[in-house]
Length: 208
Image (cartoon, rainbow, N blue to C red; front, side, top):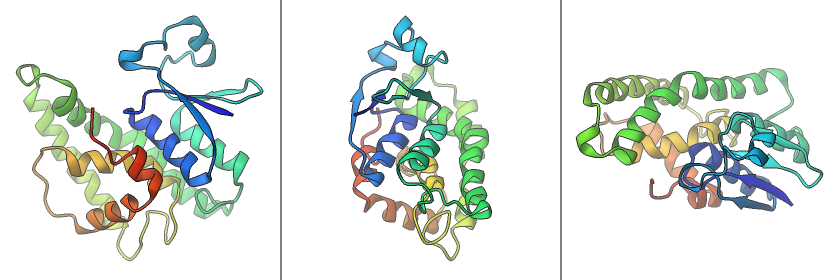
């Protein structure tokens, strides 16, 4: 059985758990990272020298780290050509663009917001950095708002890895106690995602 190493409250682990549900893949999740430790232990470092989560481990001993790469790999090995990650080059590129965008642009301001409001005591919060991150994140989510015009999901009519990569951050954006202007397409997209059992079970949960 596939093993997924990583704590359930990690946004990057959430992606993999949700995808496994979409693909109908059985898995065993093993707590690692954060309060659970393990990521600096020699056995874990042998699987993932980056010492972060998630890492997947297959029954034959193959291991892989980096959440977006794991997602691409799982579709390629269990459902090649699936609408989640289509084979047609342009359709695939449009999806992978959002996956790269999440890593290169959205991750930083959303991490600042999340850590400020969920992981940092109020007396230690850096409010100037937090306000700047809020403004940056809102501008980035405006891009997504525009991209959703006339479509149910980022890649088109069907769920794709673009939605899975951004989905955990969308939940945080709409749940954190921050001022947000109306973004009705984001709200409608969130509603569609919440109707998917895997998203509801692994992503749209209380933040910790």
